Image (cartoon, rainbow, N blue to C red):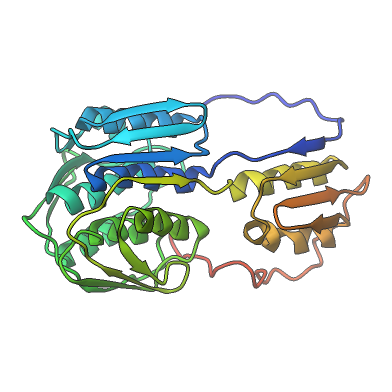
Length: 313
């Protein structure tokens, strides 16, 4: 595990624009295999998970390039249905190639995903949903392999036991080219789900209800080339605000979607911060010393979706 050495005592102040959202771009890159053609994705952050995902795409046979924040993927030449184990084990989001590869080819071999050290996070919701859609799924725990096959997926009524983000995304990816209609109930509500749906719609998918508890996907025969710009990272934006607050700083965030970060305003205001925002900016000024939040209610802010119980991808 790496180390961080922090020397405190300085205010964080100034102006900054967060980059594209990691949790939005990774599902979109996984979805790029679905259209049998070209996808152009803008506002892509230069992070390790993006580079690892591009390596997976190349290993499958895609042409993939990254320049000046824009990724171009041509998935017309895919010749392998095996996600290399050494790449799959680098990150949790490799699990999303299950839905996209099954959706297009009806077959995929994928090692158990690896990645961040957040403890065990089950992906059985993903597998059960894909089985409901007709996929033959073998989970080989000894070899840590997922073997999925079937000639054609069909739409189903799927109710998730909890609103798993990853399972919602995998079902979306599998359903856009499936035969018939798929309905996801108790779907995840996060903005990244809406973002994936927006990309798929740009590519010709028929999706409605993303961002609500019920998503309906009408399968189509094929997708087409698409271009999309990734939303700013709300987690990075919120982290910048908290960093400025805890150091008595003053910060102007630009290029943000304020609806995505507004739920944390209440806590920062309660701590003594002054916050103003507009359509695409947020300004925060913190006091020299934050007020204690120990006596405040622990009830979640109404802007947050209900917390998932357990740790499911």
